[in-house]
Amino acid sequence: VIDADFDAVIVNPSDEELAEFGKRVRDESAHRTQLRKLRGKIARTRDGIAIELQANIELPEDARDALEVAPDLLGKRLCRGDVVLRISEVEAYCHPDDSANHCRMGLTPRNAPMWGPPGHAYVYLCYGMHQMLNLVTNRDGEGAAVLIRSCEPVAGLELIQERRGGSVGPNALNGPGKVGAALGLSTGCSGQPLFDRSDLYVLNAAPPERCLVGPRVGIAYATPAHQRAPW
Image 1: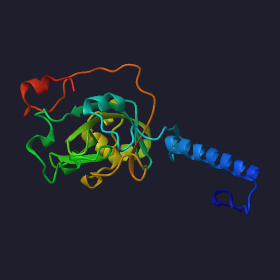
Image 2 (image 1 turned 135 degrees about the vertical axis):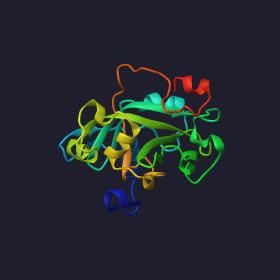
Image 3 (image 1 turned 90 degrees about the horizontal axis):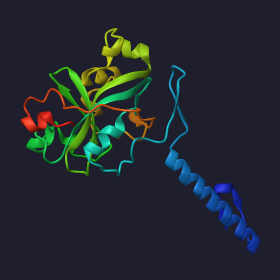
Image 4 (image 1 turned 180 degrees about the vertical axis):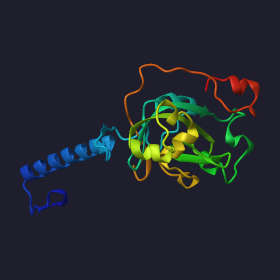
C-alpha cells in the first residue's frame, strides 16, 4: 500500500493497518470535499478588511434563469484587485422572450460571451465610454444575463475615487458605467469566469433584509410590455 498523501509506504500491511489506512483516506477525502465546497476561508484586501466567503454565488455548471439569479446577486461582493464592491442593484435580461436583451437579434461578435457558459462575465461598451458588467446566466447557448447596475464600496476606496475622478458619496457607483470604471473593466474582461478568483470574481455575502422591485431603465427600444416588466 502506497500512502502518498501521508508520505508513507506500508509493506505487507496487516488487517489493522489496512483498516487504519482506509479510515485516514476516507477522512482526508471528506476533508478535501469540504474544502472544495468552501473554496477558501478568508479573502483579505490591502485595506485590511476581511471578507468571509463561501466560494461564489454559484458553481459554473449552475444554469438558473436570469430572473432567479438577479435577486440572489444583491448583497454579494464584486472583487477585482484591491477593489471590493457590494452589489446593490441589478437588472435581468431574459431568454427567450425579452426585446431588451442584446441577444434578441441573434449571435454577434459583441454579444457572443452572453450566450454562455453561465457564471462568466459579459462586458460591453456603451456610448463608446461606459464598460457595462453582466453576469451570464441560463443554460449555455440561451443568451441571458444580469446587469450589475449599482454598487456600494467595501474596500479600495482611494482607488475607486481615483478611477471615478474623485467622485464620492451615494452617486459614485449608482450606475453600471460607474461600477465598470471603479473596477477598471474593459471589454477584454468579457468571457472571464467569475468563480475562480483569478481576476474579476464574485464572493458570497449576506443578502439584504429587503429589496425593491421595479422596471428596468434605458430600454426605450424594447416593447412597452418589456419596458414595464419588473426585471
